[in-house]
Amino acid sequence: MKLSNRGRYALHAMVYLAQQRQQGPQTLHTIAEGGMPAQYLEQLLGLLRRGGLVTSVRGAQGGYSIAKDPSDITVADILRVTEGPITLSACAKEQDACPMDGQCSTQTAFHYLTNQMNQLMRSITLHDIIHQSMPKEYTT
Image 1 (cartoon, helix red, strand yellow):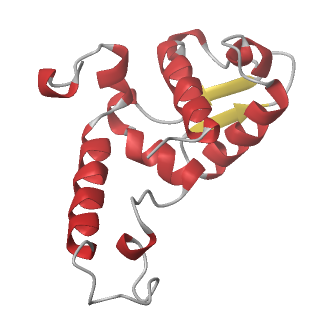
Image 2: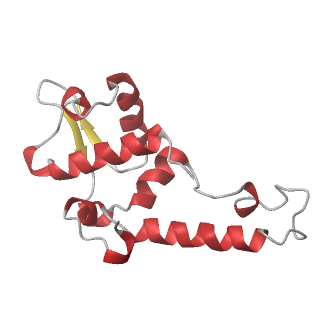
Image 3: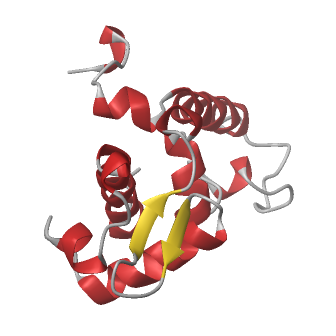
């Protein structure tokens, strides 16, 4: 499984906003300085705002801020808003998505792997990323 640019950019933007949360709202161009296309980032920030993860302020001193404490926002929260449900296979997401539903020996494995992956993403917060405090067994 490979994360799309949408998910990667959203995660980068959220980490940046979490790091800058004491500095007030950040402009779109400041957030985009990490190499993200500003127009695309604006769309992502709109999704994150509608998902309750980011707030926006208009005007000369406006910009985007993180909506919650970094320890209350998980990787799963960000990816769910920008990517939708994360699954390894269609059969792990939807019942009857495959003509072999209920007969395929790999279906159980896909369900298990998807659940484990989502559980791991729910266990990692922006605070963990900023402070690089992930469990050692998950770092390379």
